[in-house]
Amino acid sequence: MKEIILIKNGELALKGLNRSTFEDILVKNIKRRLNGLGKVEIRKAQSTIYIEPKDDNYDFEEALERVGRIFGIAAFSRACVCEKNMEDIISKSVIYLENTLKNIKTFKVEAKRADKKFPLKSPEICRELGGVLLSHFNHLKVDVHNPDVVVNVEIRDYSAYVRAEQIQGAGGLPVGTAGTASILISGGIDSPVAAWTMAKRGLRLNAIHFASPPYTSARAEMKVKTLLLKVARYSGSINLAIVPFTEIQDEIANNCPEDYFTLIMRRMMMRISERLAKSSGSLALITGESLGQVASQTLPALVTTDNVTSIPVLRPLIGMDKEEIITISRKIDAFETSILPYEDCCTVFTPKHPKTRPTVELCEKAEEGLEIERLIEKAIAETEFTYID
Ligand code: ATP
Ligand code: MG
Image (cartoon, rainbow, N blue to C red; front, side, top):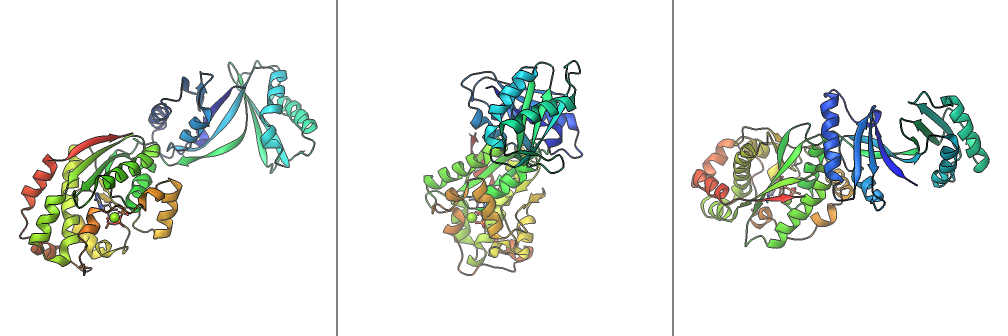
């Protein structure tokens, strides 16, 4: 039995944006994300996006999973393709809907006739198919007001489609409709969640990771790439910049007061990230910071890191508890990777008594012994770029 995926206009999470631009970007994203599963036709017609496999070996279940991770789709459904006559619609429906209908109590049939030449009118289609389903599944009752399941029949130009349940989509806006931003990604729990949260609002992602070999290992870098791959299953491909950070950390350790290590490190990260963002077309930075979670995330501390950048720093987790963040981390299958114990550059240099009430002036004073501009330029010159997909 041939199946397709249908995404209806009402199931798009569109609000306020230009609808056709939005849909074009969404269709492009769907095409890209279903790449490699076999031959498929993806088209937009009459307020519906059709995803129609053209290949007997098409991996339909995998396609459903992938569609479920594409932002901009609030809901979608799988539908059975029938010939445009009641015999075929009925005989296929009985088989196709069996699993759904045997587990529920009430249903109703709704029909829509885009092809007005079809001999039966919509209420007649409902009555005929409803009658057959009732006699076939004799535990069922019709409930037109509050049915457990609505069976939909749609008569289109070339085929008829029968579908029952809606599947919940990833919601959000299509990636690419909101511009591009750079996520500062560590190997921790928070930053992958922050990346996912902003991609959900339509941002295309670039990523920046600061690596400090030999304090941090190749495994730690692999971990970051694995985490980005998890995010990319939702956001689509991500350009990753890996910035060498060892020399900067050594210079901070040798030339700055210990209670400022973390703050100065964060300020250096922000300065470098802003430059990388600008040269890669990112309009903002994204971090996984959450207010008060650690000493460098108190409000005075955030003021000192914001102070060295002139582009917006998006902090989607700022008002979230760790539990809420972990729930998302698990949902996007990042958690098990995030908790692997590989060292991060921040943990290597954690001061014993970090400053929790710093000021910009105090930070600037603590940085006086640092050759900031030379270090930034060197780090950027030695940055390596890769592609996560
Ligand atoms: P995470 O769980 O994301 O590591 P965290 O709670 O451990 O966050 P910090 O280590 O203080 O907090 O880092 C705060 C934010 O700074 C991170 O969410 C991330 O956006 C950024 N960051 C930290 N370390 C790095 C790094 N090595 N490379 C790039 N960004 C980093
Ligand atoms: Mg961390």
